[in-house]
Length: 315
Ligand code: ASP
Image (cartoon, rainbow, N blue to C red; front, side, top):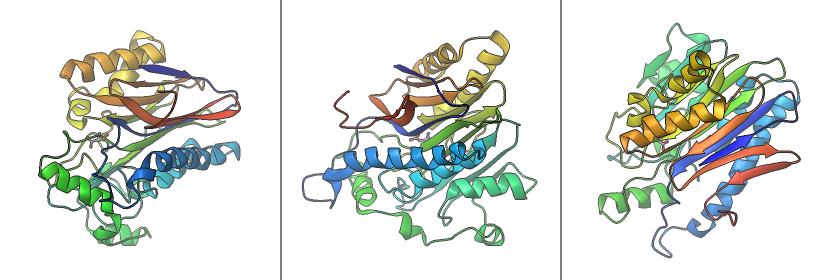
């Protein structure tokens, strides 16, 4: 499925809150607040979109915009990132996140356990360290960079606990995907992408997905495209999905929507996997493509912020 986006402004933004099936629904009365989840997802998408767009409208950078949108999603417990992220098989949260600027700088963190905003951790790796990717970093790094640390339990919610136990008891279908991300173009023509996730619910301890692998779940390249993915991370890594899209546009001259659709079909569908991709080009035109039931996302269409969410009457 494909949605094409355009922008009436000199800047543009698309965000996602994960692709996959509709939310897992816990047995009635077992998880407080479960019924309100779809509505909270819709509100969370709009709030995050507005947070990112406010940066761009004020003349801020694409990098600041994607970080603002992703921080907002990380703080909204109905998404699989930050607080509310899916749990490992052992019942802990292990976050992965990445940022990339169109100028070619990138930073990422894998298996982060205590930083409240993993996307800001990834940004610090990019800006403050000689590295591109840090895995299972000691808390002292985050402390030295002035990042907010919280206990691992702070990220865990009644819903994520109930979901893990349903998976372990075989009462939930195969793990649903989540993840959040944003792609932005700023008024000075710079692109940026950011992605953040808890990985899939019930994942093995220490498993790293595509999100922090530049070229797999996250990519930005000025003049070409900014990409953020969600879905079966192993397929995104094996297909080098985000970079494959950039390469189609850059080397073959494929129009952006077609490049995203082809990569989705060849590299994700071709691996019998599911996912969603948001991509934005240097002209402010973008695409949202998914081969799962739906891809939670928000984009601007004229005066309206449009969203796709689980109980969207339009679906
Ligand atoms: N792509 C993420 C991962 O494999 C999961 C997701 O998007 O839900 O870690």
